Length: 72
Ligand SMILES: [Cu+2]
Image (cartoon, rainbow, N blue to C red; front, side):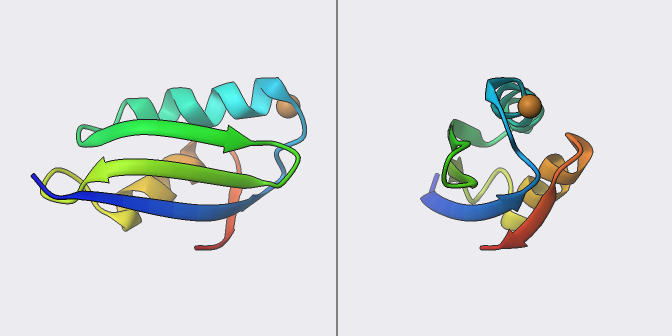
């Protein structure tokens, strides 16, 4: 188990509903430990176990939720 934190800038989140949609999608990924979203700043912070998942999967999850990754 190796804990890492990713801070990702996400385009298109505008309200709490968006934050929930992103959280819900990321919580499905095994290895993701916690997710916090700031709609105001357009950022998603994810604590994850890098032996269970990786940044690519997390970015895919954000895309699945319907939002675009701007930068990490
Ligand atoms: Cu929204």
